[in-house]
Image (tube, rainbow, N blue to C red; front, top):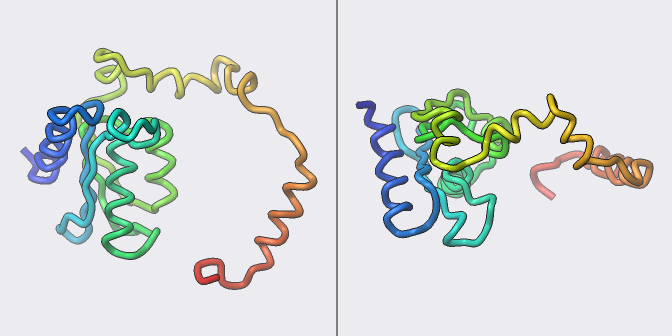
Amino acid sequence: MNKFMELAIQEAETGIRKGHGGPFGAVIVKDGVVIGKGHNQVVKNQDPTCHGEVMAIHDACKNISSFDLSGCELYTTAEPCPMCLGAILWSNIKKVYYGCNIIDTEGIGFRDNVFYQMNKTGEKDKLLKELDRDQCLKLFGEYKNIKDKTNY
């Protein structure tokens, strides 16, 4: 077994045994060293965004004092949901290794596949509606004019 996947599984076991949430654990590795870890804490924190991958990203970013995880790899017990995949992409993680796939997670009661199907079924259009774009574009213009966006 891969040693980093083993750590992700151990992280998930900790979470489920403490009643924190589902069987999802993750570790983030840079240059062969674990820089972050996390497990699902949706139940513990009463927050649907506290997935294992997101918690691991929070931990890694805190540990290296950066929002940029370029060059890192993520090991996780399950294929990332769309929210986690978004966080992975935003954090610049270069590679993700996962254990169970979306069908496996569906088999234990999770509904990740529904989110992947939203574009195909038109459900996204029922949920999302553009509103007050011009005012929001002004806000975007203000942000665009900031020279150093990482230190203000």
